[in-house]
Length: 281
Image (cartoon, rainbow, N blue to C red):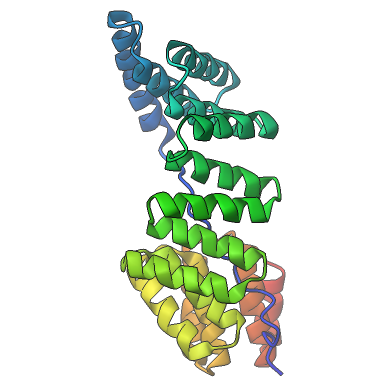
């Protein structure tokens, strides 16, 4: 009997969300200091320059300190005071409040932007992410649908697919992943999510095709290697499965999910000592 009979150990579908890579902290801090001085200079020269306040607030946020966060909040509020119809300022303040876990206040900022401009797509996208964070899946689906009506993108189709999958609307999720791929043939995340969903449905050959493409486009996605390894297990490609598990561990040596799955595979092959090593890693 396969250790993956019920495929309970798949990695989850991935939601596209902006992030900042802080791996090189010293260099980033140097750049932030320079940027902060530039935007402060802009504000001194033109005290009504709303975009400069928003940009300086974003820089403050990137410092990841409580003191800078409060300075960011002041700058966002200053931009709104200068122009109460500035949708970007409301969305930026909403994201700040979301980071601070003031979810209701954040929701109101995103909604304010939508009331000012019902065609402002970033507000719908931001509110969808917030709704999802608060556990409100269907409102997130509604906001992503409205955002797609304004301007369809691969990221939005992918994100709505993830929400559909979370609501167990698997056919709709797969359709959204396909639409994301159709919109952007190089969008690796949609291939990964489509492949993983095929794997969950036990359509292993289709899963392999999509996961192959996902890895071709993004060779640093350890989750794609894990799910492809599981797919290869189900297709009886033992050597290929071990190669993918090993590659996933190389990319992320502290991800216990990979060791558990590889240990399960060792166990199914009667390689008990190797399985024990992975289970205790």
